[in-house]
Amino acid sequence: MPAKLPESAGASKARTSHRVLLCIDDDETQILMQRALLHSKGYDVVVATGGRDGLAAFGNHHVDLVVVDYRMPDLDGGTVARKLREKSPNVPIVMFTGVDEISPDDLKAVNSLVRKGESPTALSDEVQRLLAF
Image (cartoon, rainbow, N blue to C red):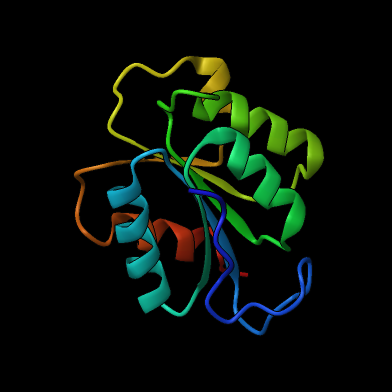
């Protein structure tokens, strides 16, 4: 599934009145749940079902924060996070995963780690914390 436009998006790379989040996960059910949760909190959400699609979507949209899964078949979340850091060092990245063993180098590439299966609001709470200023 290629990247989807945020529900209230205009032209690509255009800033909307809402914060734009990019969610990258190879599990389509998971990505739809993330989209619904974060959209209900007032965010515009772009979704990508894999690392390569996520990198392409990042280049096509103004993104305020990225949520990335760790284990994906094409590019793992650590690789995606490092590539995003090269492109835009100041965009916050949340790794959202059920994987317990994550390399220290991969953890350095992200701002925070949220475990799948934590409280239903753990992800949205962390997104709100990182975007507060």
